[in-house]
Length: 274
Length: 274
Image (tube, rainbow over all chains, first blue to last red):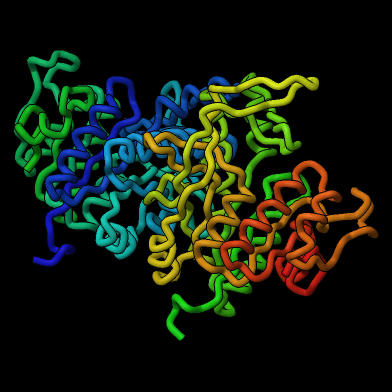
């Protein structure tokens, strides 16, 4: 079996409270040392919100007519997002992994055309029941992933750590949803498993009651399970579906704050979609 | 001649006022299209100062007993430096190059152990004529450059864009001087030429009078020329010496705001050290 044929484990590290970077880095280092081929993708929403607030640019959100919530990223907010996500969070993760002995390499979607997206020129937003069109938003819909670059890096023994910023058609940075970016990367690499580490133990029938955790979901039931998804969880189940459409066999939504978050997820303490 | 034996042109892009990123990206793109093998290293001091000031952490500086001025980087300032330099400046340059058709890849010294440094545990500082020891500074002395990673990327057709942040011995990010980082990278790659693009036309006998520009310096006279160097220019001539010790044949100190800054420098409108 050549290196490129080895199974890839893609891990998305949420940027929300309750996600423990240090535990994730430690767990990832153990798996890497055992020969796992890892690719990490991260968010950074909490960090971007905090930095924006410090700079007098508190976060704003867009609710789509179908109920999906996403960040409203005008040009100034994009600058804040780049600092927080590609600056702080990406560097912190790379440093945390290097400290544990993983030779990480931080990337955004701009680097080597890693993630190309098309800018959404006009976005429908629902505010107080009324629809309006937003035209100054710098977010994008993912078009492609430069998978050969990732294989070059993996073959060199590096662990890619990817920030959810994509390259627009005019070279401009675009904000992309981190869960969907993770799905696109995992899909392009034909990863065996994608783990979405977040601040909760998985999809719950009655959020936030952890005793109502849905442990197993058959892929064909995923759409129907959307009814249980609240807020961010909607994006996660959407991302799970996208990853599976591209050939990812398992998508796990799991607690990023657990003792050994990756092991915990892989032992079944999560929402396991297959 | 194999790709690896092709001459490399290393360009350091200053982070000070008067340096025009857009012109540099355009000029770099023309050279890249003509087959030049480029590596870019950048600073970000103006950006870091502005961000720190916005966040209530204005910049502080350390003056060494020999008169070199460097940034005082305590832990909070390091966080600001990462956001401004590895976040804003690096991403802006990568986006600017992508826009012009260069397939750039942004890196810091943490990525793939690119630049390793040892933290200066205690730094002598001179304040109002008195010496004091600073112990909470996160800056480092460069120890090594992972040149094989750069060759891997160059061979894949990518142009590395490097932020002056190094990997400390415990995995921690360290601030390193961008001119000296550029010298270390150019030296490790055995670059033919290193161009230091800054806000002034070069080393002047009577700063800031541009008619006193010193156009040619023989390497053996470099130390003596230090007498003309003011402030940041001291670091540049120090960096020039370090680069040449490692085999770089030409170091050019040139105006980063000129019409075509790289062409201008290579045509001799600069301080050319050989």
